[in-house]
Length: 408
Image (cartoon, rainbow, N blue to C red):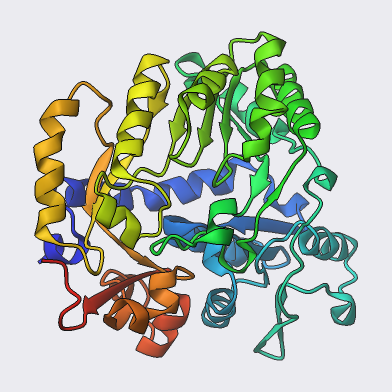
């Protein structure tokens, strides 16, 4: 029964249970290792599967230190999800919904000074008044990416140095050079639910991105950078990547890119120290790629895999299936192709599509022949709420295919 609900094998379920049994011990450790009473507010960022862990710790923190303000943000708390979660969990004091670069500093300053002026709260904040959840409206997204501060990882590296894990591993520093997706601005991939209401594309200048990468590398003595962007800005092939190559460090950089790169593009990535990419290859079938609005073709995807092997660039890619309108012939053709490309990097995973909030599949179910949309099965076992409430907080949904639309 559990295997059917969770879509996991028995070994994976046993591992989840073992981790759950240690959760209380871990929370006790977290409570003991930081002098929480010195803080006016504690923030939690939650994306995808981070929600319950964050909520569990926030509940304990609020119970032990009631004066501390708990503030949540991240993809799981955008829009109606944030409002409903705030409504259901009374130990969550505030939510910064959507991009919080502007809203959170204002709220944090008020909480630190002990002078919360509700009338002065910026857009994007959810708070509680007389037991009622109140939202100040949609947050204002950042448009000038160069205006953002360089992140400060001091706390992380201080604890890293004090932890025995530092003896056996090398840290990776996170870097952001853009937000949104320039391809999604033109043709939103049908299954993609990233970025919510702030999907439009914005990018840092090459000079600013280079400055940030070099600063973080120098400051933390590592050349391993994980770029968190959804997609590489093509203009960075002109400014940022040549500058990284000229800098001469032994960079090990990860980037998400679009799959329709040329051989010259891959060569430029490798010269700049980009050692691994995630190119959004989800199929090798022209028909299936067209169904998902990928803007590429099966042969082009194979070419990219070949060029990455040639230039020693690692590739993270997946094979997805279950797209409305696909056929058995699509997969028969791919199966016939696979023996000829077995020397290329294999997919990291293979699985069915998932309906995520904010995706075209979720926003336009009738257009794609999808019906009976409901919270993914595990949600009802994780949150003891009504169906209406679950529909408001769910990020991942189950669904059925309308007659004639189901994959064959």
